Structure formats: C-alpha cells, structure tokens
Length: 370
Ligand code: NAD
Ligand code: GLY
Image 1 (cartoon, rainbow, N blue to C red):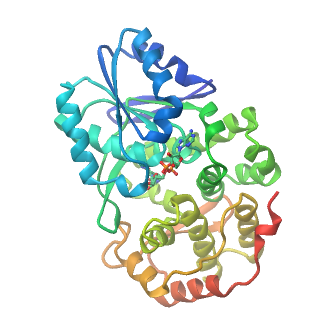
Image 2 (tube, rainbow, N blue to C red):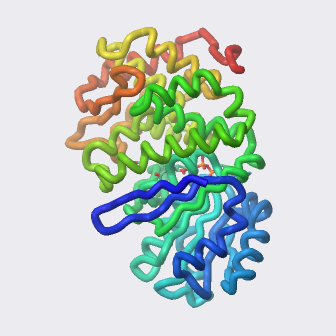
C-alpha cells in the first residue's frame, strides 16, 4: 500500500492506495478516530457490488452505517438529488462528526462531497473512489459540485476530504469503457507534468488496460502524487492548478453540448487533441509531439475527433466556462509532452479552425489500439 499525504495550509490528509483496501475501511476509520454513525452514499451499480461488504465490515468494527443510493448517471449530480440526500441525513440524525463515505466514481464523489460540504455547514468526507478517473483525479483536491441546468459543476465548493481510500481491486469490475475514460486523465498528467509517465504509458498501455496490479498501483500513485503536489501549491485553483484543466476547456463544452451523452473522459480526450492542435497552430507544440499524444489517446481506446456536435454551440459553451475570466477563454496548452502553460490569448478564429479540422480529419487512429 502507498500513502500519499496532501499538505494544505490548515492541515493535511492521507490518500491510501492499494489492493482490497475496502475490506479494511472499518479498521482504518476507527484508527482515524471516527465512531458510531456513518453515511455511505453510492449508486445502485456500485452499491450492489461493494455496498453490503462495506457495511458489514463497518458493523464488525462497531459502526452504525446507513447506505443511501442516488440514481446512476451524470444527470443526477444535481441540487434535486442533494436535497433528497439532506432529507435522508436529517432522518438518520447525522451529526457534525458523522462522516459521509462517497463510494463510487466521480459523479457520486462530487455529489456526496457537495452534500458533506453543505450539510450542517460541513460534515467529514471520506472518498472511496471506484473508477480509475475518480482514483487519479476527482477524489483528490477537494472540488465538489453539482451541475445546474446545462452548466457543468457550476454550483460547488472546495471541500477537502479527511481521508481517501483508493482500492485498486475495484477496477476489476469496471467496464472497459470506464477504464478508458480514466485513462484520459492519466494521459493528461503525463502531458502536463511528467514526460516519463507519458513514456511509461506508451510502453505499457496494453498491460495497464489488462489491469496489471503492480503497474496500476505505480501509475495511480504517480498521478496522485502529481495532483497532490499541484493542489498543495494552489488549493483554490487561482493559478498553477489551472494546468489540470488541459483538455477540459474543449472537453467541458463537448459534455455540455452533447447533453452529457459523451462521458467526461472521452470529452477530455477529444479536448486534449483539440488543445494540442491549438498549441500547434500557435507554433508552440511540434507536429511530432502532437502525433504522439494523438496516438497514445487512440491506443487507450479514446476518441481523437468530434462528430455530430454543432461547432457554434461548442464555442458558445466555452464562453460560459467557469475558467473564463474577463470574457477571455482560458486554455492550458502543451509546450511539449511534460510541460504546459496557461493562455488567455487564443483567438476565437483559431478555436473555430481547430474544431473544424477535428471534424474534417478522416484518419481514424482507432485501428492502432493495442
Ligand atoms: P461515474 O461516476 O459516472 O462512473 C462511471 C460508471 O462506472 C458509472 O456507471 C458507475 O456506476 C460505474 N462504476 C463506478 N465504479 C465501478 C466499479 N468499480 N465497477 C463497476 N462499475 C463502476 O464517472 P467517473 O468517470 O468516475 O466520473 C465522472 C465525473 O467526475 C463527472 O461528473 C466529472 O465532472 C467529475 N470529475 C470531478 C473532478 C473533481 O475534481 N471533483 C475531476 C474530474 C472529474
Ligand atoms: N480536475 C481539476 C481539478 O481538480 O482542479
């Protein structure tokens, strides 16, 4: 098991990464000083797979857990669902030190985190991420949110968990498409911060997709370490943390315009290609680096082009993005693999040209999948 500590000005918390850690949650929470009532928030898919064993493990350690399920899907990351959860917390007589355990992927984590952040002005939050995406990204760093109408993550807060327990064994039940979605964020870390990680992915993508346990622990730990290091320097996303949004300016627009039909990871994959192409058009990123990025994204099973979405709507959605400041759209653009910079100087024309090029591109890299 690896332990990564995330230090912030007001304190720190641990991210535990290893195999079969869910079976030890009771013991771990007891050591962390929790007792009595525990609220597990999950969805029916993850609840069915891991809910009962988690609950009985907690009961074995003297806890009184309750499982609350929210329906499956991004559209339920909403204020309406948060409202229903507040009712359940009140019925359960949750108290200021009653922890919320977010058992699931990023949807459950963001929603449960939002509820923990706001109920009684904040009750303890413990993330138990069960998708690759949530293990390398959404469970780390304290962004919690719900969507509002078509706007993604627009109502939220920064609310750090007290503990993150990442059980890599849960990835065994994850559908392949979801593993691929998580790979988008993993590749992102390589591009923004760690060329050696990118090269490791180029060399071992097949073994990672085949869930090689040791390799997964290494890769998830590397990603966690990168994200923790960035969050430590910029908890509130006022500067450096913006680099984590590589691929997300275009990606969030794709999610919004597709009405969340295109999953976050896939949207980010296309977004990384688009933002790489913007950098290339600005004569910053070389052709060969861009092609390496595209090839790896494609080999991970992810899309590298857009189809069926209106370009004007995508541009409009980008203008509504939370990352926009003073009317300018903000991009994290790669200089090389392993290094990015933030730019607010991308012309709308360049964005439009790149989106058109992405539609027009006929080369299908998907046959390169390993
Ligand atoms: P998700 O939570 O929808 O999970 C994907 C699917 O996998 C769901 O159907 C879920 O039921 C299922 N699932 C989860 N774990 C499973 C398991 N172990 N076995 C079988 N099935 C399992 O999607 P996601 O990709 O984890 O998260 C996407 C969300 O995360 C988006 O809402 C995005 O906005 C958010 N996000 C937040 C942050 C942040 O910093 N807070 C960062 C990135 C993404
Ligand atoms: N997922 C981007 C961030 O946490 O800042």
